[in-house]
Length: 394
Image (cartoon, rainbow, N blue to C red):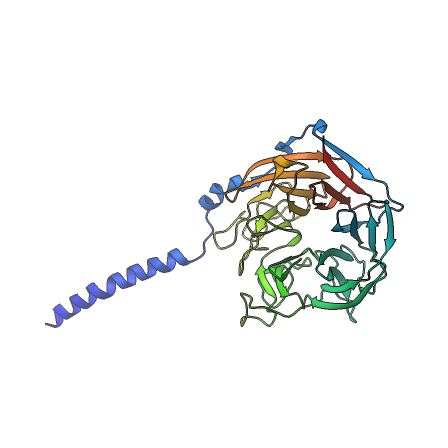
């Protein structure tokens, strides 16, 4: 009798043990050579891209009454008026109908240091939002976001307030990010990992994350609520994302700087993790050593839609809409600092189906890009004595 009971007990318990263990193995995150080999097609080399024929477009410098010193962002008010930020703190109004400019008086507490300064700008309803680097009393630095209201004549930014400060502050002066975008009444911002590497995997730092806040700076129901005091965190595991854009389907995408290779384009996902610095998206450290595990990608982390090796230093991206280049509708335009490129990508069913270089080595280090209502493309370059450039079809 006891023997029969033991046999029955064994027959019941043994499958539970075996299949229970198998279930845990399936769920456990692993990194495999086969997984990475299957994803080698995500790695791209810009040197293999075809370059567009110059007769297809007209690239023209807009001659204003002044030039810009390392401008960082361009934002349209309307088709004839726009705003430019410079890392040195200048906020400038531009009138394209008269090719004239004027400084916008402001009290934004930005500090130009290393890669930081006055960075992105975004006009939404009655407010002008900006991202910038600031210093605290201990001479450490961080990325901040604030907003103010433009005077009717665009000569002043009034009632400026800081909405968000990335915590903690760090002594390093690199990888501040930072693009900002407003989507469905939330403000999203990219925060670089400040050269601190593994903080991008920790929830006690905003560094290396995408954050989401309400337009007044308060915090909505974000995915890490209850897991950290930094409840603005929306996604983690990025290195230095300096581009952000909204696709026609409402998805948000970033461009992210890798190290020596591994620059990528990828989708923003609530609670997601791109894996920095446990993986490097095909890149290596600048001294040639492996990043993290040495694998390109991991089943544990979000996958980009492509990763460039070697790096191109992608500064911003935008989804094209307009009649000027009607064949480009919904394509992604990416600006490159390092190789001075404008790249066009075709995204179909979540995958890149075509890549080409529109132009290269013509105007300097491409920093930001915007499009007016007609589909004409405007670009600024991260250079001394920089200009605005306009791209039209021929």
